[in-house]
Each structure stands twice: as C-alpha cells, then as structure tokens.
Image (cartoon, rainbow, N blue to C red; front, side, top):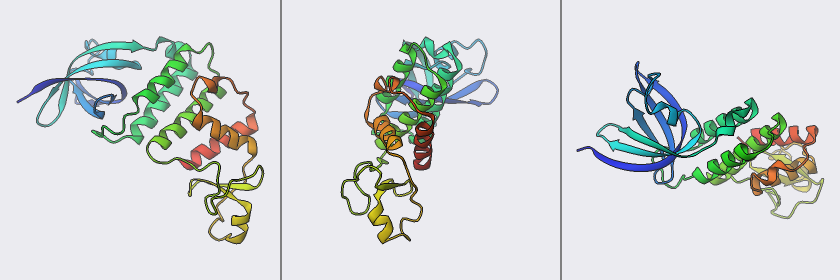
Length: 239
C-alpha cells in the first residue's frame, strides 16, 4: 500500500521518462540521494516544474510505491536567485551538482552532503562578483571536499611512502597514490614512483587551502594563472 512521506533536498539532475513524465535525482537530508518520478513533469505548464528546475532547497511530499516513488507536492524553502545573474555562476552550480550526482549512491543515508552543496550555493548567491577564474577555483575546491567526504582524502603534508613531513620544494605529486612523496623516496624507488610529477609550493598551498577552508574564505586569495593551472591539474588528476 502506498504511503506518504516527506524529505528536504536539492535536485541534482533530471531526465525525461516518456513524453510527459520526468525522473529527478534528489540529494536529501534524510535519505541521501533518492530517485523520484514527477508525473507530467515534462509538460511546460506542470505545477511542479518551477520548483524543481532551479537550484533550491525544497520540501518534497512523496508517495512510496512498489516500483518507484512519485512526487505529490513541493515547497521551496530556500532559493538562490543570483545563481542566474551570470553564466559563471550558473555553470559552476551545474557542474557542482553534476559532480555530486556522480559521486553519490542512491539510498545511502551516510552520503549526506547537502550541507556542502548548500554552503557552496549560498556563497555563490551572495557574492558580489564571480569571475571565471574564481568559479573554476571554487569548483576545484568543491571537488576536493567532495572526494574527501567519500573517502578520497589526499595526503598533503606527509610523504606517502616514508610518512615524514615534507619540506618546501622537496616533493613530487602522485595523483594515483593520492598525494605527495618526498624526493628521497622517489630516488630510492623510482620504478614505484615513476608517475610522480613536479609541483610548485604555491600550487600545493592552493590545494590545501581549497580542501580545508570554507567557501567564503576562497573568495579572497589572489589567483596567479600559473599556480591556478597547476591546482586544476592536481584536482583533475585525483578525480
């Protein structure tokens, strides 16, 4: 027998089902990520569509069924209207939500990352300006934080091999093994660490900063193009 239940969440993605219905992937506070169906959600004048197509925190009224759950009603509790102020904000949000969708499994309450998503949306919404460089840095930072939450926390302070603290300029970056390795260990076992590559101290500082500091703080640092590029190469190699 179908029953009604409630959840609070943010829509991560959507896909059409047939000519009129639409599936929504929703990151919720209560159940982690869930997949729910909006009947008639693909229609232009559907009542649910305005609440589900824009980034927002939404209260969902859901009906459980034998095969899938459907959306009976929605109520938007927090919106982020400035996300649509410029393309940089919009692309940043879309990419962050897409990464979250890829990184989470359905119906896993332990993967409750809604606070991380909400904090990013709030900073983007309230920022006076979000340049393309700042948006790309925020996205890289978001990816680092997300990977850390799902168990891929990079080692940024101690050598992956000997476990000793690293010194400025005396290490290399090894994404496949997840962090930094000192020059001494690379020299002693070059075959094992052949994929390690050089990385500047400034780029490593950006990776540390992006991983550890809140999004509000990441609106302030000056981004040097060369170091910013290294930062992104490090994040992408980890991903």
